[in-house]
Length: 459
Image (cartoon, rainbow, N blue to C red; front, side, top):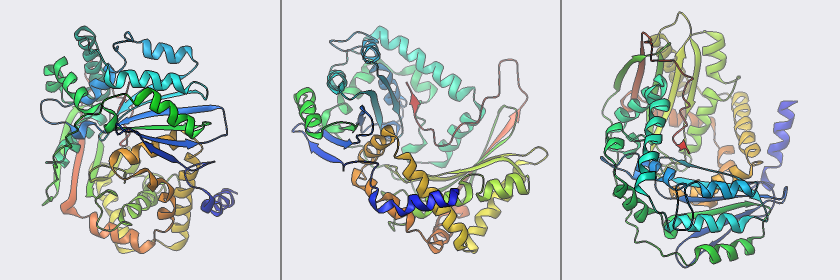
């Protein structure tokens, strides 16, 4: 029955672009603000998002974590709004709001009834250029951020290992910078630093406004002009290129911290859509990731967890939507009685297999159908529809890619999967990180595994 349902979804794909309803409409205001509207009439609600082209990959030594600190300060008062008043107004209107910071962007969003869009626009326009950045509020919020770092990273063995792993894997690329920032930079950051960062990056010509839901595009454009149109643009200085040099051999690190169990990370340098030598390669890498870790029927779960029982858990992670090239990640926790070395050998054996043996058509069809169906089902979410548009536009790929993404995945062949495995998953492109658990002290607790895809910290 599941196979029939997926097949029916795929038969409908030619009619599916970015979710149900009407196509995306775009307008650029005179001050450079790009406005994208995706009408979806299924319910009388809307999602409004503002995406800024700045995140941890724009940062440098001495100011790491500043994009995330600024995200927090966006809720702490403007020339017209007191601290916390933004959130209070949205709540009074029956809405929800939050924000997140990632490597390549900082985004703010509201979910409201479809007759409340003007309220969201008025509030977002106010804080786009008019933050007060009160020193006392900054001091208090900085302590919140430091505590966030302690609980989410320093006291989480897997998260801490992942942070140190990235710092070793990337030599020059700013993807080695943690979104939350390094502790010494959090200790030295000043409110003046945040004010300079805000002035430089938070401007209409460095932002994308996305609205999805039961809305009239012309009314959205009118309200955008009314509330954002008078804001002054900024002379944006694009960050200087910090290209990662060619890796010349395998890299390894061991992290020794109190923990209950060992943990293994393996990452191969791979391209993203923005820099791939062949346009199909990132799509093939996504399909490869699903072959290895696409649910309970994928190879890792079937062969390493249930079959050989060498892994308590094993997974992959890859994103084609980066501003810079990234990593194809493998991760896992050894099963009881198994070592990290045995788990690593089993993962490498799986890589060697996809490099030497073509995926048969039956498995390829199952993986392709499952992957594409999951992408289509995700479009049921208004938030996801808006998020895809904002993310693609902010990293420089262009929102139009959303309409062809599923078709590109469907076109991937077994030969292309083998080709990217052979080309990119090589020892000289590999970094290996191992969490070597130390005895738990009274002040340490083992926490839940950290998701490798988690790059941002939610306010």
